[in-house]
Amino acid sequence: MSHPHPARDCILCGRCLDVCPVFLASGKEELSPKAKHQLMAALRSNPQLLEALPARLLADKCVSCGRCEKACPQGLSVPAALGALRAEHAGWPQWLWQRWINGGNILWPAMATLGRMAPRLPAPAAARPLMEKLAAMHDTPPQPWFRMAAPAAGTQPPLRPVMLFSGCTARRIRPRWSSKATALLELAGIRPQPETAFTCCGATLEHAGLPDAARQARHANITAWHNADRPLLVTFCATCAHGLHGYARHDELWHETPPDSATLWTQSVVPLSVFLQKFPVQVLDTAPEWFRYHQPCHAPAQHDPDAALLYAMAAQTPAAAAHGRRIRPAGMTTRQCCGMGGVMQLAAPSLCGMVNAACWQALDSLCPAQDNACPPPVVTGCSGCTLQLSGTAPEHVAVHHWLDVLTV
Ligand code: SF4
Ligand code: SF4
Image 1 (cartoon, rainbow, N blue to C red):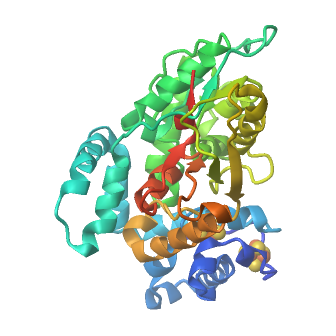
Image 2: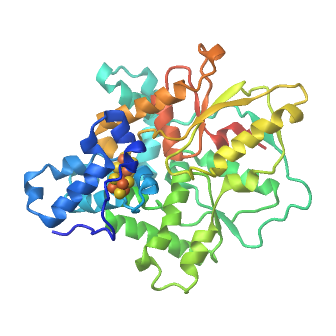
Image 3: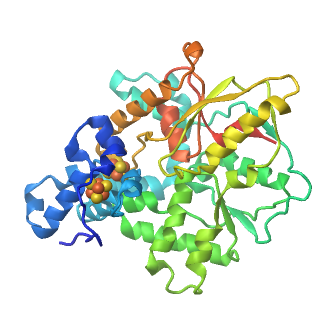
């Protein structure tokens, strides 16, 4: 039995305790990244311990948010270590997750159709959370808040070809996100090539303990990119962008590609919001007075381009709105995970629920005091966060991907 041996050891500094949503929501130190690394080290030196320990219980209690890795001075990654452990001890959650991701072209639209009926279906109280998540998969386009116009003359489109990497959610149940992204790029004279044979970015498969499926997905994406003449890859999901940026770390992917490929790939992944920062906007009558921003775990903590775009649009509003209407950010979450959790949704749903509840508590704390009766909508920049928060939102609270609040 083998476990990935980290290049460095945990030095027990405890920094990861401040950021791990599972530890913060549960208060259980045995679920912290520090405890997981200690246990991994014990397993490496004494493999038979695994037989006496509930390894799967340990492995399943991580939402793969990656916050511990960013905080760790040793660069230790719990998701990578647990992905390997899950691979060795695969069970029904892995089996189901692989079918959920790889069979999504049929399964997801079917679930979205079922979601349309979910609010009207009789269900016992215990099944209501599942029905609410199903309902969130159904596509109900909201009214946009901002109209975006073409940028000032002189803005140069990129010299390289451009292609969207829409991600699994948009391809399967939110194709209008891809259409909106295309329309926004076309405002700047950028004509994205039709999206080719991309598949899942692979990150969720890797963390679920499905390394072969993850490798196949990454390989298929790189092949499609090469076949399309190595275009810029424009994304509108923070988690997809994070997953694609991670490809350069996988040496085995680049053996048969030209020498500059890994570097060029990393440079090619560009968030759509980066393109849109300087586009002028007009606020529409449908805009609320306030909105809240949920920062996805996989967005850059310091320079989140989606947050920058939303805040910049809100700042433009008073001058741009002829009727003087304002829209204001009520604040943003920066430390909370929505609790989506990938395969942990299947293996430890109650823990996902605790993480999600802590996230809503933080979002509730952002409500302007005078607006308690009408909590502002929530905007985010990750497909998974959008679905997870939509499916768990309190009544009358809308959750949108930021593309939903824009029109051309
Ligand atoms: S990836 Fe997230 S949930 Fe998992 S151990 Fe690290 S901080 Fe905790
Ligand atoms: S931050 Fe890294 S080194 Fe520090 S306790 Fe956590 S896992 Fe160990």
